[in-house]
Length: 285
Image (cartoon, rainbow, N blue to C red; front, side, top):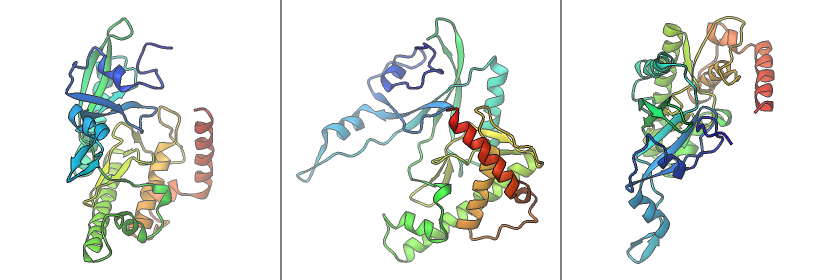
């Protein structure tokens, strides 16, 4: 098995605490997050005190409760093998582009930093991030079915009534603003964030929308070419499709064929080609 953490399919929290660039502290525990994937190792940073309550329980008026420990931050170790600092700075610049266009209201903010990793026996530069933890429900773009979706998502915690209606309206307003800012980013800079993955978008209990996958921003071209990302996935086309789903299903807007973005990316012939690329991607995993 390779010694390079960027090549390892699985990295445990205990292994992270032993890395040369992680401070040895008994105050915090690293727990592998279920969304770790092709681009990053992702860990929840928890306090040892909260984990102790989660595992051993706390007494509340004679009732033993086991409250799940909530992360203080999310820790990301990118798998990219950068040739030099310039490539890393370019990667960080893409995150700043997201921050500029979407703003802290719509992305999980992160402190991006470079570490000197020595686990391979040589000094390697690795990009990491200490990211805001966002609590909420995953917005699954492939299960958005009409205007009742948001109401059904929220009503597990709030009963039917004015408060629920107000929360749904607030979420719709935030989603509309998110779509607007994303389209400005496409028009002004020719980039689109990765909206394709299930869990990339989180809807908070308060109705805010947050993009948590901030490390895959792809170039977009308004022509017949289908761009694939560095992992071979047509994330550009899929992200445009998700954008259209948000508009059609959540905002209840008609998708007009004279819209240049959707006219190009949502044509039946192009979508058939994209599906073929998706199938090839998953086959090669």
